Length: 122
Image (tube, rainbow, N blue to C red):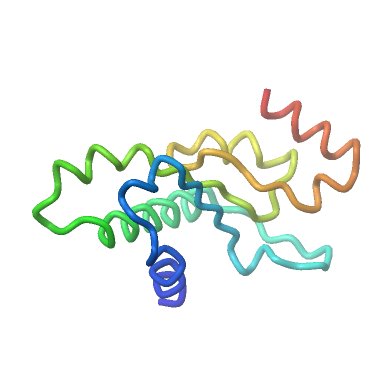
């Protein structure tokens, strides 16, 4: 799977001591577009992907014998989702337990759209 290879490559230099400073931003390829075509965000897919990213990082840092250490660090990994985030979906996205924030792209270019997005978060 392409995503797994990318994650392993991108996180290969991360050390256990770096976890508390680490913020991982993920934006799916389908959401990167300069067109008006927008795909509906499936929160289950976002959640699954974030869990996968976290698990790959933990598996890279810890061996099977380090389960106690792994649990200690699991909640310290922060994941931010970017991908067609707008006022209509931001509230649902940030409710996901493994989503610690969002990257706002095109929705930040229009003042009214951006204010609506912020109002849906607070």
